[in-house]
Length: 157
Image (cartoon, rainbow, N blue to C red; front, side, top):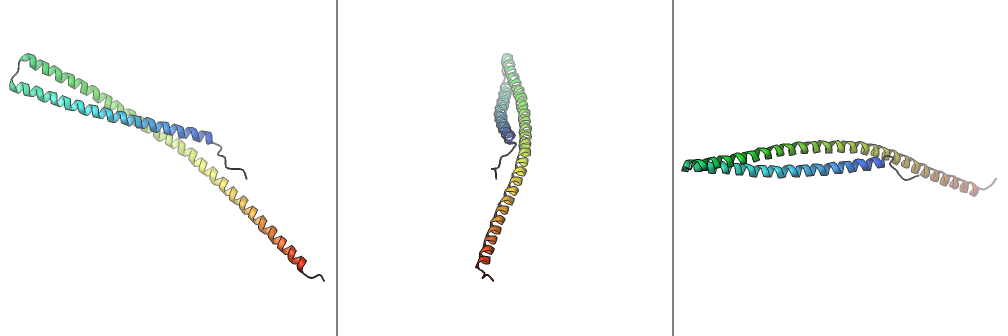
């Protein structure tokens, strides 16, 4: 019998490659999201520290110029924080899209895998039938040969 050959092997290879690429893209998106989350936390800490320092200057008494300078600094930190927050939300959206893309690629690969499994099972059943047929023929020949030998060994009358 011919060796097993999957008729959609090229499609299977493409689907596996697509799934692998989608997994890599998802991993990159997760790393980017984690990096941006860390940056956002650092910005939040800097903003909190800037506001605390500004309040301490106000409490201790400072000039109007120092007060305005502190406010501008806090405003700049707040703008950086809001920009970082927007970047983090965008990274979250991209990671969700990458996850959906990965799940779709996995489903597409699983469809081809199921077809592969069905085709392989059909081949295995045919192979088992062919082997059984061969064994039955051998047993039948052996039986016929044994009967012929027995017939020759019988005395002629």
